[in-house]
Length: 224
Image (cartoon, rainbow, N blue to C red; front, side, top):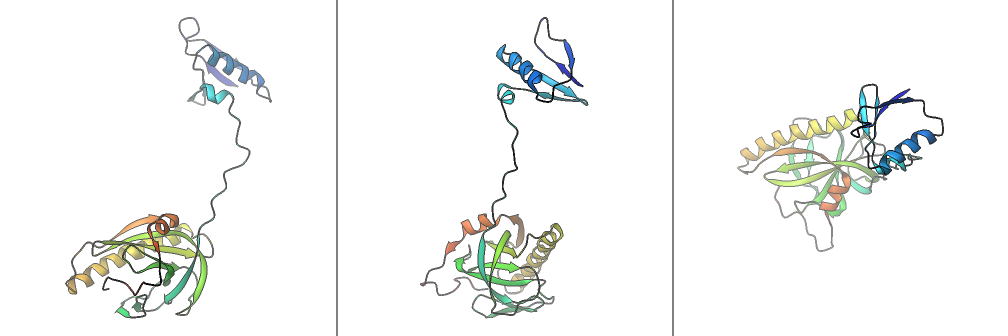
């Protein structure tokens, strides 16, 4: 049983009506239509909660099916740092530094796009270790935005399946730790600027900020 009240002065402002709506909802719909036609704002109280109906609610039909989730973008990634490697290489193969900790996932770049720093768009691939130089087409489920020396860049997070919550949290933890370590390295190299992990974003946002790579590209304009 629903407890239904109309809040229209003066005669029906405190009137309470009790009824059991039929299975087809005809009685309930008629009551709502009448109140909306008279300019009233009927509401339903149920289990201590109140819902106020408007004109659009009367004729609104329930959705027959949930909205389809858009398919994540697919990109080609070239692996530069296999999972478990201690060597941090750039897109040209040059060794940037030797890490004190192994890389927890496969790391590489998307050769068709340039990131915000002017280098190839970075991407990591979750899953088992892949040899250096492997080319793989894989779906991008999100991205992590990283600031290095005040310059912002995106890192696509790729996998053959949607990352679990714990996997996403591990990726974010790694980049927070990486930003702190890179900040110390930049101080030692006398390279000023802010270093921080800016959090998770959609892969489509990262790809929208990137730009296509042209044949005239000769390498990153930034020294890493």
